[in-house]
Image 1 (spheres, rainbow, N blue to C red):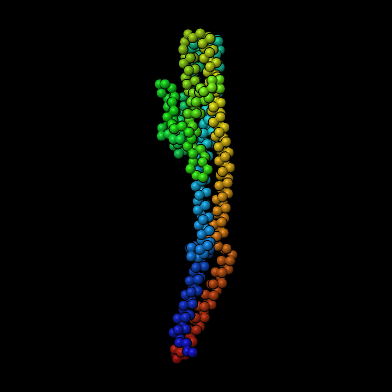
Image 2 (image 1 turned 180 degrees about the vertical axis):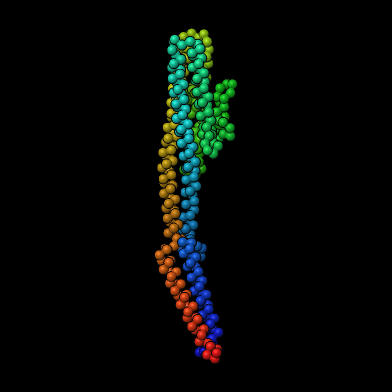
Length: 308
């Protein structure tokens, strides 16, 4: 069998091109750090990596939702703590107003201080989170949920709680009506106490001059009772916010672990073994260099080289 020079050259060039393509492919994988860059490289591993990526993205979405919920509950817990301190200050002023030696002017001064605390409480009740969402807006409110009007403070939000949509439902807000305006009165089953109405009655009672001592004592006694009921309600919601924070923390740990597991699974499916890849690249590079040298030697065996 006779092999022509042209055929030998074409065969050698074809093999060189294959070796060069293989070397380029190995270099590309080594540079990217990925063993599976296309589904055709390893369909089974590519499918595993795709499922792991989807699980990782779901976990990241859940973590973002949990982060928003945690931020809202931290701010709500802080706001309710501030409210509790303001109610305690108002209670101290009301206790002082019961002093029988105080004049109408003294009590009017205390009433003005309580009115200031009442306005501070209203500002706390209308606090927002960093995203412009009202902490006590219930299931949603585009404007401040607690509105001060001629008849007192009313609720303009939607009753209930807004929750984050991502895996397990976690709260993004607090039911402002329940927290501020509808504290259950244990002494009168079925009736509720509004913190702001209670403060308004106290301010009005202490600001009215010429009232008998018995009426003033009744105002102070009733006000203290209602302040305590409202304070207990705020403390109860603060406890709920703390419980939600603990629950969110546990969920974040579990979801973070799930994300890490998905990342590990994806890495095992598509990432490159660098040591093995470097060794393979060096072998292919050596083989390609040898093929080039062999081709250059064979090329010089042409009859034309002898004639020349």
